[in-house]
Length: 133
Image 1 (spheres, one colour):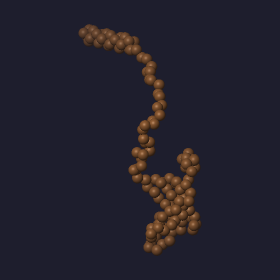
Image 2 (cartoon, rainbow, N blue to C red):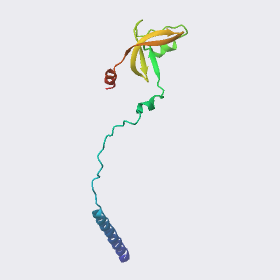
Image 3 (cartoon, rainbow, N blue to C red):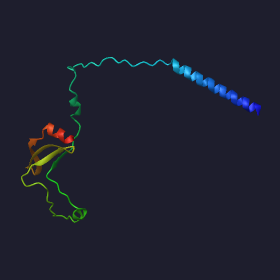
Image 4 (spheres, rainbow, N blue to C red):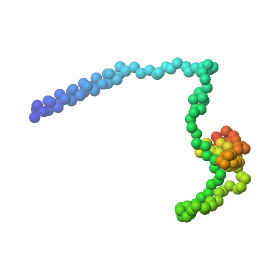
């Protein structure tokens, strides 16, 4: 029994010494704030515009004639020859969307048996930015 007690006391003494070592090592650590050199803006006169790197990225353009809402039952009832009424009037501008964002409006035209869009209005950047907020 005495030997176990002595053994426990010995372990406690070792732990106490290790704690003292940890404290003394912590005291020796020198902490200082980092010093960074000042940032300088240099005009890039000789470098080409980086916008050119984006020129070959594909964008999805969509011309939207109008929209409507239908129930699943109405969609399932559609057959060949069905007519869907849209929320736009005849002669009203169609919308040009780039990656889902409205950028212009125009009128639908026919070009060599294909539909096209003659742009009549470009949406101003300020208006597009307001819609983002």
